[in-house]
Image 1: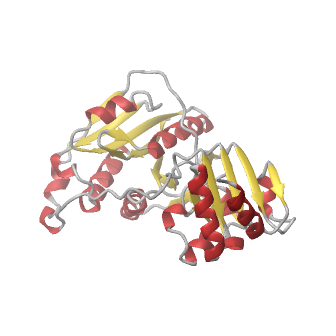
Image 2 (image 1 turned 60 degrees about the vertical axis):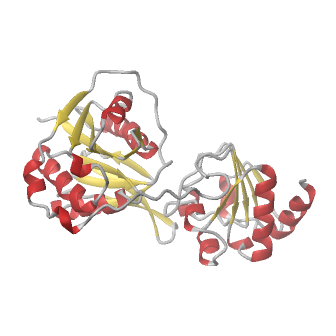
Image 3 (image 1 turned 90 degrees about the vertical axis):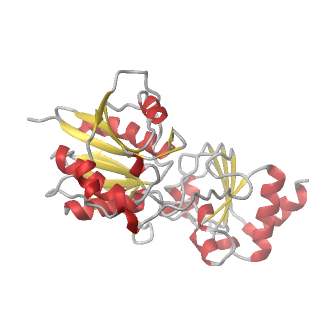
Length: 330
């Protein structure tokens, strides 16, 4: 029997591999043990100058790296990336193919899956191999009320994506990694490169402390989704050097932005302390913060689901506690 192959698509920027790709490689080494005879963990990376990224991948847990280098791939474009990746998958036939649920991964992954006529489970919170050696993808459904199990038993590769921060990044010793160069000249000849032209890159720096770096996160939910309460959250975060986060209702109210939302459709955080005000604790939100060091939450509903994941629970009006804290902290 041929050895199973688990592929991970590698995102990188300025020569550095994105954390979500390293997290997925670590997860891939875990799920490889679900196969009776094990599996090879393999990275797939596209770009122009890949030397620095390849050096970093030598300690990522990957057994092999498919390095696809071409000056046409210097800037990311689905117009080139999707057909190139599709060709490499068709040639080498991996069993699993994992992507980060990022701006890039959310386009490239499903597009490749469509060309390969296979399925893709998006925004997964866990992955494992069942006794039939099929990948089972756990995905929140019905507003986070249930965790569904998604399988794609009849088509390969089985594909899935996860948000950054869902899995832990492991440390691996430096080891020899087989680098496989791919010739993509044939597929590039079939692409009209004039149809999509790269103009420039624009990097937008988020205001305040970034959620992925913050040691303290203050999160507001539906219970404080009004301007006067949100002002207290912003003031408190500024005084404490914390990052401001939210749940979906706050974004819908216009008080916060999408990049501040925690959950399966937002981002995942691992601060030392999470302060939650008026957060109900829906599964799709909890999935993005349940690895926090210490969780303190305020909700007037003593049966709020968020309390199941809290180290310190305060049953009270969140707006009242917020106002008091804002006044007390100088």
